[in-house]
Image 1 (tube, helix red, strand yellow):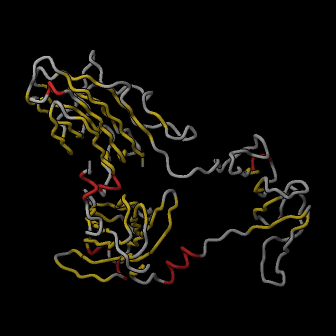
Image 2 (cartoon, helix red, strand yellow; image 1 turned 90 degrees about the vertical axis):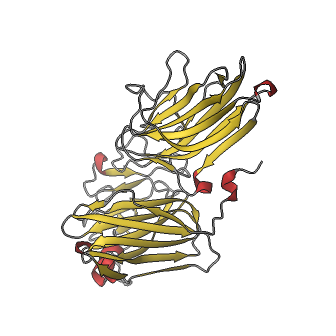
Image 3 (cartoon, one colour; image 1 turned 30 degrees about the horizontal axis):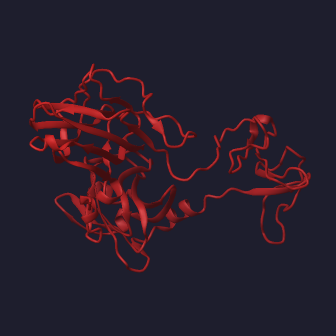
Length: 404
């Protein structure tokens, strides 16, 4: 069976825009717009008060899996734009031929707070050659972004391999220093044993607390339990993802009009939930053919079921990730779930004898289902509209999400 989302023409531009007016604090780079979903072309548009024009810088990042790369930096006053009615509008950045899994736009004010901004992004698939265009970054901004450097020295015993002012012009360390106590106020990468394996980045203090251990790709630390102020850990592919799965198939009676809730997931501060995938499997029997119902995916600004339980039912895809901050409820005949004034997002009409699986996929649909504020809740329910006596309908569901 061909799912509805597979019929989407991803070559047609789809629009993602800020849901509320954007406010920027002084000198803080703020993510203002995220477009999740496979695309290779993107146009960034803006409509801003004229006060933004000379003080705000935009940066467009691209993500592929867990890699995040800066594609372009553009100041508003270096963009193609026009002014009318106290607002400046224009296009800041255009990207072609860069297949990614998401685009992320940030904004940063250099002086005072600015308010009431709006950003929009068109994204689609195209077969054009790679190209990133936009305003030309000012010399001061470019210097600030590209010339942040750290001086490192490699030690061979107690003598730095490169001394200050060597023939190649590299000034990495002043004086020979001794093992564990580099001079010149720099960081040094120190080898270990005959093989020269890197075991630590050594601070100038030389004390144990200043030794920042290196964690290898298998998660081991050759230095043992040395203090790690950088919170290093083994690198895994992809970000943290969580899941909530029906512990059993919910057997819904078709003998009366009503609603059976399958599950709810509640967002908890300080992170928001982005639902990446929802899978609902359902099946009936021939005797239930005359019954009609709907499987509904919805959200609400508040969960009507009272205080949330501890999130023990939520599982991590990777046991090494931090626990989810969200809370969840699953179907219980003894304690029915409710959702206060739910907003229906997806409604799938079914008949009492149907058997199939419905899948919501953020990549295919072009946008995840987002719960941006604490207390906002995602719900899945089955509604019986037309009854058949003494028949049942079986439903099972699961939700996969990330927390941003």
